[in-house]
Image (cartoon, rainbow, N blue to C red):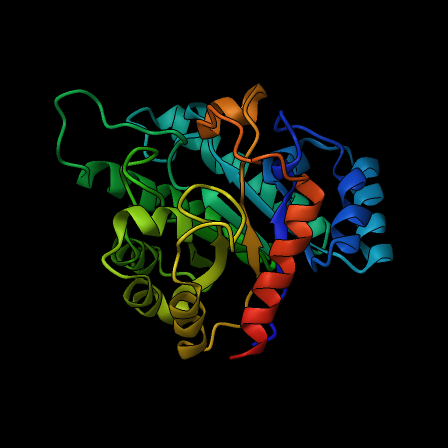
Length: 290
């Protein structure tokens, strides 16, 4: 397998907004093919700022992918119609901006809010799913117009309630019924919710549009206990040729540490750049054997 391998910019940052240009030459030097950035920041950038980032990525030979967890003001599953409409409009702006960047991939919790909990004493999530599907069916039109994939991320029950398993995500994208609505699986979340990694990946099958890599302890691949041979083997079985981006978080503090719940230093004295470079090689060496 020769999939492109990337890393999320927030591995290095304390806050979600950042100058992404600074990370382009860094990830190239460390052996990555992709830099994944915040889709919301891209939508809020000026045309000039986006052109600057696009030029830097082209010059370095680095691909950009995009990720976000929508905040409550954009919740597509909300009981409030105005909130859902804001979410549709925000996703539309992101699709337009990513299209302007010649980008192809937006993933994350783009179907509800992050973090998201059901209202107290409510146990039936079907009405929330229905509202989300209806809003996504409208929003995905902008993805279709811009050649962008909207990848709904399957996450653990402690961060969101709508899509916790690959099977739930398959049902969701089948209802949206658009070639531009796909699934994003993440090994950190799969470790909590799925019975096996391989079965979950095979369940997603051709609907898998993006893939996140990370250990059960949120450290980079190769610094934990996940069965990477099983994971990459299953990706090979379904013929997955898309991007794989790491989403490790190891440093407490700031917005990122707070929102990801990093309450202790996970670096164990290791240098962040060295760790990223080691993990990029680890993943690529694994892929080369398949």
